[in-house]
Amino acid sequence: MGKGIKIGLIVTLFLLLILIRSFASATFYDPFIEYFKNDYLTSVFPVFVMSKLFTNLFFRYLLNTLISLAIIYLFFQKKQLIIFSIKFYLIAFIILSVLYFILLKTSFSSGYLLAFYVRRMLIHPIFLLILLPAFYYQKKTTTSR
Image (cartoon, rainbow, N blue to C red):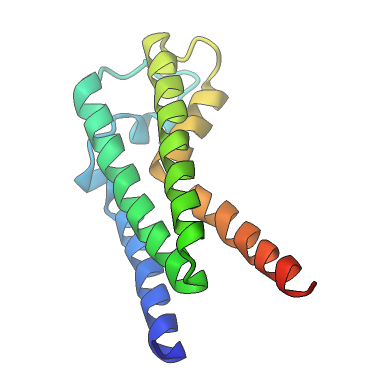
């Protein structure tokens, strides 16, 4: 694959991530978008449907993950990195979704900040911003030896 095509695909995939973010409130069920956007410290805890919320969280996480995996593959083209990333994303989803479920069941009684950031990690491609530089650093340190 040519370098120009690869760069074009990577840019397109990043634009897809931006599109998902742009249309999130219209596309995905998440009453906490408005809750955290406004003054959540004084707002009433929103009423929500747990199954619908987690179905939409899963779908959004899956979309972000698939696009992120494609970006990682286009950058490095190593099967081992994709396998590691899949495991990482799967474990992260399980841990974060269980934690978010507990936080929701307790109506964020342990504080809003933890719930805010756990939710953010589930709905935004933050792990891509962590994995890309980590894999790049690993590539640079192993090839320079």
